[in-house]
Image (cartoon, rainbow, N blue to C red; front, side):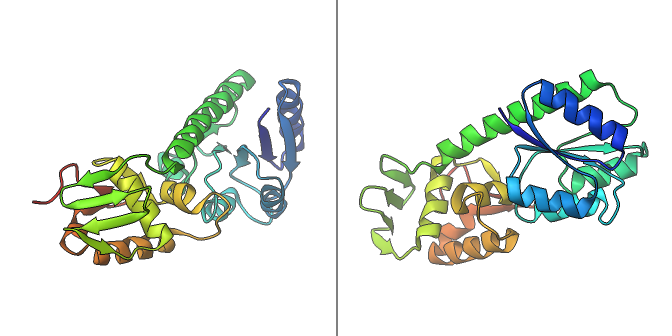
Amino acid sequence: MPTILVIEDAVDLADVLVRELTNLGYRVWHAADGRTGLNLHQQHQPDLVILDWMLPQLDGLEVLRTIRQTKSTPVLMLTARSEETDLVVGLELGADDYLTKPFGMRELIARVRALLRRDQRIQQLLQADGQPATEVLRYGELVLDPHLHTVALRQQELDLTPTEFAILDLLLRNPGRAFSRNYLLDTIWGQSYVGGDRSVDNAMLRLRKKLADFGDAIETVWGLGYRLQAEAPR
């Protein structure tokens, strides 16, 4: 069963959450402050975090911001705030969903299950995307041969690093599809990698330079990441 980390300082609510989720078969850890929550997250790598907005030591937004620097763990935020701007801030920082207090336990459990199902589908997609191509990929005059582990542009072989090769492999298998930086980090670098957006941006910059005029076909999707144009340059 999935593992869940509850970061909530209200004792009565935390006890109910831990009890109900445990009764459903989940393995549950609890932290009553933000700093302890981050330590437990790093130690146990939970499948889902239920995170209160208002916490001692570190508030929920700071906890969320720190988690998102390295991990894509689904986060369900609990908040007594109902202002739209406050909720937008949490979502923009990387919260996957939120519940405004007071809430019913049935609704919380439904949202937990929905987030875990979505994350499972994402992990399956990550696994599929992480598998290298099994046949030669052609994109105009650009050819990637997975068996020889070579890339040639206009019959001239390019010298790519393993990371650049993996990125190009993924893009060539999915022309027109946009990939977020976090998704690329998880797929190419792996979920255990401690890095950030700069690693992706630097790798893309190097790959674009090596692809010369074909590098322009790798488009920046502002606020998200990158995609390869659906049609190859002529």
